[in-house]
Structures are given as structure tokens and as C-alpha cells.
Amino acid sequence: MDDVDRRLIALLQEDATMSYAALGKEVGLSAGAAHERVRKLRERGVIRRTTVEVDPAALDRGVLAFVMVESTAWMGDSAAAFAAIPEIQEAHVIAGSASVLVKVRTATTERLQDVLRRLYEIEGVSGTQATVSLETFFERPATPLPAVPPAGG
Image 1: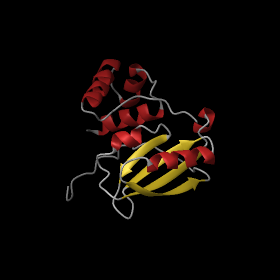
Image 2 (image 1 turned 90 degrees about the horizontal axis):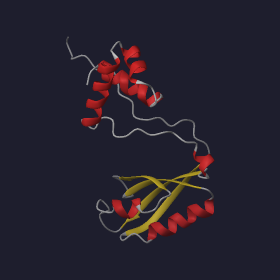
Image 3 (image 1 turned 180 degrees about the horizontal axis):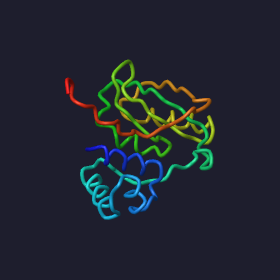
Image 4 (image 1 turned 120 degrees about the horizontal axis):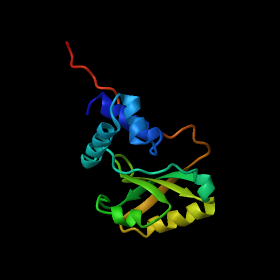
């Protein structure tokens, strides 16, 4: 991945509706060349999907919580069980005192409590510890860092 690819990714993350002509103009390529670059980034899995960012509160998901899930067994094979709970936005197998970290968005704390109950229905889950976010300063997508020149060069 070169600097042009990195810039294309950054531009698409800012506005995924940009035309290939506008993308090309920003990075010094023709529309066709920009389209080909983006196509290759998709094929390689660098760009996994194109989506829109929506205000969670507008969808009645104003309560954000991060939940540490403790278990009595390895949870690495439980992705489908976590994915079956629609309020869970992300689930990560982690190292440490807990086994899984999930990001949950609900309408109310009562709904959060319901999600916690449903987590206990997953085989192996033995405990949860929820932290409710009071305010989000920012959220950002993973962005490509500039290429680092080789040492000594």
C-alpha cells in the first residue's frame, strides 16, 4: 500500500459517497485510475465495506456500555452467540481477568440490564462487569498511517 492508497482510504472514510472523479482529483489520478485503485483495495480486503455513520441516539441507542465478560471456558468459539444479541456492536476475545469485551448500545439502562441477562445465557459465561459511558469525546475509524521510511535511509 502506497501513499496514494492511504490518501484514498482517508478520503473515503471522510465521505464514502465521493465520486471517483473527485477522489482522483484529490490524489492526482484520473477517475478510472482512482476506481481501479479502490477496486483493488476492496479485493485485497483493505476496504471491507462501505457504510454510513449514524447518530446512535437518533436510533434510540443513547446508552453506551462496555461489558467485560468473565467465563469458565474458552470463549473464542462463541462469536455467533454474541452476534445473536443485536444490541452488541462489537465483541473481542481479550487477555486478562475477563475473556470477552463487548460494546453495547441500548435505549435505556433497563435494556442494558436485559442484555446482561442474555449474556448469562451464553454457555460458559460466569460473570459480567459493565461500564456505562457518560460522554464520548470522539470515535474514529482505523486510519492508515504514513509509510515509514526504512532505518538508515
